[in-house]
Every structure is written in structure tokens, then in C-alpha cells.
Length: 378
Image (cartoon, rainbow, N blue to C red; front, side, top):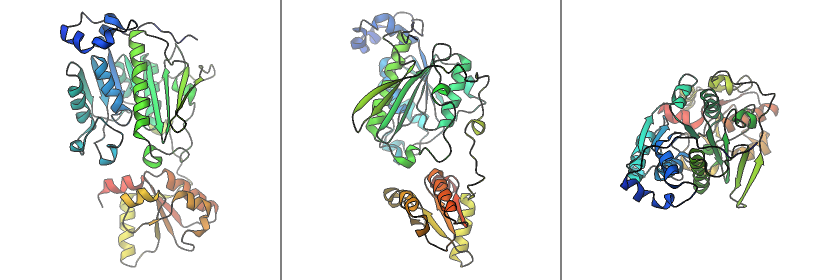
């Protein structure tokens, strides 16, 4: 399977003198030249997520001269984002990310048009949103959204560039149904709940986001202009601790069931809560009040890392990092009922299962973690 592809986008009309000055160094490249730059000008590229990967992607797409850039994100800027989401600044905290992103792109290149999609991709809107663009760059941080993007791109006939980061590691690939593999060839099924932490739980180095996000843009430029050989059929794996890049071959699975619709998130990434009893943030707040009044008895255990607990914790919680809990489940407040929590519910669910296997029956966890607690505003 060849990864050398024809240009994805037809050229726009002639460049203006201002555009020739702005893109002068790119026009010098024989693989791009004026025709390639006109293709970039005509291109419509959708970026899913204005976070760690979306930040460098949006800035470099704008700098490259991509004519229309869409950005999908329903979140607002949080102070904890600023370590890696370089699109946003301190003054943007609390603003919708799509608004902050649009302002940053305008500062980088006022010749670029930005389309704001302040919404979460769902099975109901993903196909409509994706169909309005030539190419998609997915910088989301969860498996559910990646499957939505994949299925929408398959049905719309669009290629997409996938990137993922965690801690010091990153991956990049290009997927395109009919010309090469799709995301479902790489991950036929989502991982079991609790087995893969998010960046909010495990951490990530900002420079890794920059490395992966800029690589995604390079692939986008190549696809739009037809330059070089794309990553289609390969997965690029980055280990920043060892400072290595390696490629893995990936081919379509002929046994894979065809995509005939965009599957709802709860169908793609269903979480089996049958063995993970939990409570919501409102119930935890009620039980904490009851505990303060002497009418309830339990130990609230934070299974995150010490730095996370020190930065922000649910009042009245005690810290027992997950690794310590898993090493000796019986040592955690023996004989006391337990309520566990983490950042989003993944680690606490893992801890709960370990305690149940150790014979601890009176244990529940906070669904949605401290993020749900913060949203409650208790």
C-alpha cells in the first residue's frame, strides 16, 4: 500500500501580494510552491479539541496559510490547561476555548478564517460537522470522541490525522477509509474502563504536545498539497524520555465490520458499573454533612498523587495514592466504610475493584471524580 497520495484540495485562485510576502519561505519549497500554497488557501481543516494538541495544531495550520480552520470544543480555559495549551493565556481563564483559540489564530494570521463550533461532538452532529471540511485533525483526549471522529470521517469520505499524548509519550497516524486503515483497525475495541488513565490523571509534558501537534500539521500540509509520503498505513510513536521516534506498520483488517453509522458514545465506550458501586457529587456532599453531624461514618480517600491532592482536594479527604493502595489494600482504614475519589473516576474505580477483591464490601467511589465535585460547586 503506497502512502504517496494526490493533492487533497484543488488550488484557490492566485495568491495576493500580501500572501506571497507572508508565505515566502514556504513558497521556496519545490514540494509546495505557489500551487501548493493555493491549495492550502483553499483548504478547510477541522481541529477537534483546542487543548494540548489543538493548540500547536491551530497555530501552525494558521501560520501555514490554511484558508478555513474549524475548531470544535465545548470547554472553557482552566488554569491547569496553561502548562501545555499554549493557545491560551492567563487572561483567557474562564473563557470558552473556541473564543480564545479564534483570537489566537487571528493574532497569528488575520488572513485565515476561523469557524467556531462551541459544542461537543456527538453521534447526532459529528457527521454534519465533519462533512463541512476537507480534512480533520483530532486532538481529543478520550476514546469515545476518537471513535466518533473515525466513524464520521469514514461515512463522509474524509481523511483524518490522529494524535495522542500521555506523560512523555505520543503517537500520530493518518486514517482514510478506502485508501488505507482506519482507527478501528488500530483499536477495534476501546480499552476496558479503568485501564488507561487520562492526561488529567497521569500527567503530560507540554513539549510532547508540541512535538505531536506540529507533526500532525506537517501531515495535514502534505495531504493537502500532495507533498511527500503520508503516514497513512503507519503509526509514528514518540518516546520523549528516550528521545526516539519509531514507526509501526498498520493495514486494514479485512474482517472488521464496516462502519454504517456514527455509533453513540455510550454504545462505543460503554462502562460496566455493575461491579463499581458509586455515588454522585450531590450524594457525597450530603453524606459529608451527615458525617459532620455524627449521623454517618466513612473515610473519604483520595487515590490521586500527592501533588494533585496538595493542589486541590475535597475537604475532609485523606490521601492514599493508588499505587500504595494496590500494594496493600488491607491497610486502608481497616474496618471503616470507604468512599474513594480521584480526578475523573478511573483510578478510584480501579482501587474499588482491588478493595472488593480483598474482601472490603463497604466501599463506593465518586462517579466523575473531583471534576464532578467541582462542577457541583459544593
